[in-house]
Image (cartoon, rainbow, N blue to C red):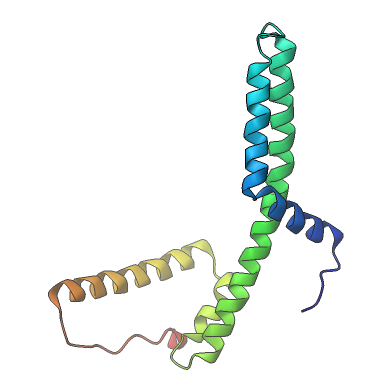
Length: 141
């Protein structure tokens, strides 16, 4: 497996992995508890409130970018895995390999097509139908 040469991607992956751990969540909760407990010491002042607001805003702002990077990477990996499964499955619709090229209107039409197929299959299951109909070959579309 090749290592990523992009420093940001390596950092984002490591930071996302680290921040997703239960201990980090527990640490965040502990920080909130400490902030709440110190409220009376600081008289629930504006500065006291500003500390938590600023801290959480900065952390949230930075985490959005880390999460988006990780999500993009995971989505790309998932697409590649599915593309490989479609490629090796002889019954798969090869037209599915190029869905990224379709516009939203075309994707919605395809979604309606599959939803209709699924609703028919669910209806067939409910009625325990045994008849089988040849599936439409989307490669011919």
